[in-house]
Length: 426
Ligand code: SAJ
Image (cartoon, rainbow, N blue to C red; front, side, top):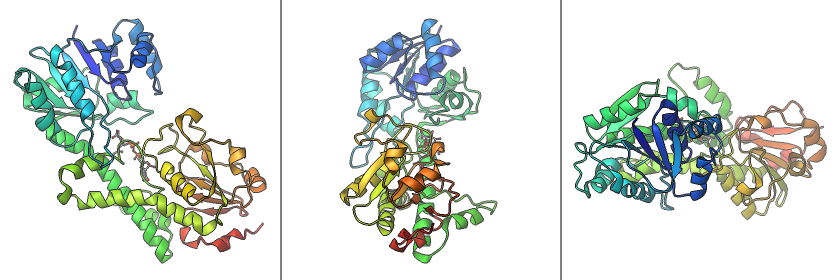
């Protein structure tokens, strides 16, 4: 039976390890966090992902997946460690480099090494291959090397690992073929073989495409605000054109992909990427835009009930969430804040979380920053009786409000915002 060593047991490494184990491989999962390894060897996991706990329990019980602090010899090595951003927005490749160096003593002729971590273009050719060559290996002949970026969505990882199209970018053709063979054991989607640098760039451009398009929608929101136009109606009408797909404006762009990946391109070609760079700036400016509008409708030191901390709806992930920036700006302006997010546990954040009732008590505005489905139908009677001023500013165009006595703003009627609107007709 072929053996696989997966380095990095996070949101990608762990499901990938479990999936290969389910397919029949002997899999050893490696992580520097001892707690993760101990949990895994008991059949338990540290992350939340639909169906993953049962799958891991099963393959660990059957002896096909186990954890280890150190790598072991294997036929295939998969690197799935994080690539965070330094504060100057360049990629921190230290985890990837350390993972490659760690597996070096265990490499044997004929092994395949796959990097799944998101990396800037040319990383495989210019950084990873040279590290492997240090030990005298001829990369592409003795050791096969490929970049196979993950493109799965949290909450659907086990489905998308199987069904999504998989990009397999080898340092040479034989490396692509070797890597594609491994994935074909469980991937039912198309497996596209290409070069390492094309795979690196394709992954980054998918998220950059989305980031740039969201920036366009956010810029439209700003223009419409100035000119007195309903942004949402414009988007709806324009999208009736068969070749137009305007995205949705919001409080900014968060998450570990869209808000990070474009910088990996900018880093490598700063003079050639002004559009991508500007898109990042526009999206990063949205928290300020939101707070400027809060100041138009709420008196100084009024109470804002912030609804939603996560970077998008129905998940518990606050990485790069624009809500964190909005809260920071509101605090600087001395607003009284309450924060409500039913998807977040108190220990995840440094703010004190409130219940729905506590959050809206005496509040002057509910500020919706995330489209959790729980926010769709809010208790209008409570809003009316408990809030000091029943106003909602919905940056996600998500909440459905029926009562006319609750003042409701979204990016459709933003331009109507002013302190005058504090006078609410009942
Ligand atoms: N957002 C908007 N307006 C929109 C759409 C999204 O403001 O019209 C915001 C969201 O609120 C959120 C951010 O963008 O803050 C990112 O959300 P997302 O759902 O677009 O993306 P992610 O980061 O959760 O997942 C993306 C996906 N990539 C693409 O859709 C191209 C996913 O398929 C990738 O697997 C993932 O990045 C990744 O790992 O790269």
